[in-house]
Image (cartoon, rainbow, N blue to C red; front, side, top):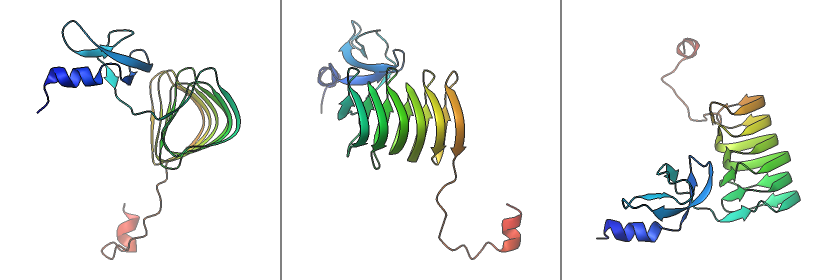
Length: 172
């Protein structure tokens, strides 16, 4: 069994998403022994394993194909293909002329273009999106900006339902 102090030490220095800073930060141990954001001291954070990062000083034009989760802190112009992985656009991130295909897309920065996600799209309060979104679930926080269309139609259910007649379906 691992002690709490051992867990704290193993997480100290990890990169997390701080909800108060709305950015990726490292963890530190507070004087009370809690894990907090090393920048603002908040305990309102979430660990997100990040494996690929387009840093703030990087600008990419063209097609970006990644087979792992991706964080964009810089600027990307063009197509982004992530299969079923998570795309995180940080508050400083900017994606233009986008054709994004991913499992989930979390927008805290700016996106102009179209998104197709197999799981969900979330626009955080600092985020803005101009374009079309196609996904089964969407979350738009207070203060977020969105202009475009949303299609949340789920994939067609191909399983037969013999207990539902046309008359029963008409009442649904």
